[in-house]
Amino acid sequence: MIKLAIMCTDEAFEARLLNFLRGEKDIIVNGFIVLQNVVHDLDKGKDFINTMAASPPDIIVVDGALLREAAALSLPPILGFMRKCAEMRAIIIGDRFNEESVIAMMKAGVRGFFTERAS
Image 1: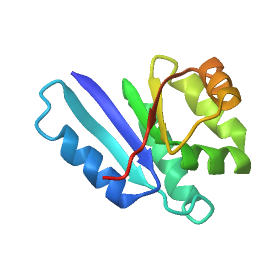
Image 2: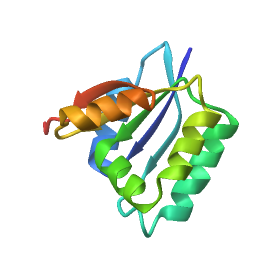
Image 3: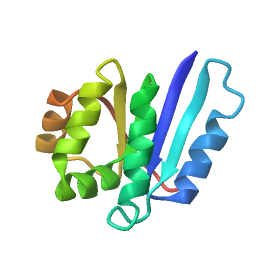
């Protein structure tokens, strides 16, 4: 069974992803959170990260916009979370990626990138 966690900024995207995963026999979503405003939802985000660190998912899907905002506020907590969850694989979903960012994220442990397309 693959344990999956989701962190995103858009409720509609989260709903589409959860609906897509519904019925999957080999995947269980053991955590998800929507942070529409990283600054205002900072404590909520930290609580989610601590919960996930206590029982790490196999894969975490992260909205690229959320990652950029969080990194701009404070990168050390993100890196600390990644160290605590060394076996976890990260997949970033975003509207676009540049080569420099992709290389940096891969060096930090990200294993996949998907472009979000509006349905």
